[in-house]
Length: 353
Image (tube, rainbow, N blue to C red):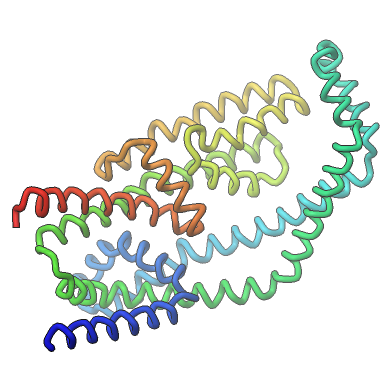
């Protein structure tokens, strides 16, 4: 009878737990972001709490700092980038609509390098003149027009939703800072696991978040800032848009930011000349891509140690499955699984319990 009551209790507990998680599901991303950032800024909260002797005021000050330093600048960048995406798409569509296929072919034929190596480029030019390529271009134009239309129709709704999610994020961050340690202690007390094993798991999660924040995200931010400077002074249009694309490309091994700046450098070679192309090639090599070999190892040397291929699949897989928050969730899931395997091997297989 005792076991019966126990399983009934477990059923009701997990049933209502799943219902509660279902209720939270619309807010899961801002809540996860608040947890991740809360872990990162928690040392600052502790310092402020000791100085001003108030948990509420310390939490509020950290939240205001996050709002001023992170949320507001990112919101401004998002608005400007959205405008650049729309403007860039409209320019591309107008250019395509105002130039025929023969115009493109004539432009290609007039390029000095193509003239000298015409036998190599003739198959490409023939394909450009084919009906298949023309259909591909038309389908692409229709897709881009539909995309822009959808973005414009949903802009007001998206802006309103983002404001609400930002409020949820900031509110959650406040309570995580103020009450996070108490809630964590309550959760730890409910987990049937040896204290030292649980501390190992929680410590691994903590180090993983810091390593990803300071190593992967920090490197991507640094590369996007430096690349923006390079794009701007090289005279590349839509420099902010390309720097944002560089930020996301920085998460994709093995070349990272080079996926963006190298094609742009080729564009400079073909449109502005060898001098400009060589200058930006040197800038990209020395200042953008070199950060992968300087900044990332420097900030991650105290963090997690994972095989390169494992980190690649966990980061990219998390990004594809969960969005940008998956950059953190992927490595956290992987490292937690690995440390759990070690604990299982020590406690279960070796019967050290």
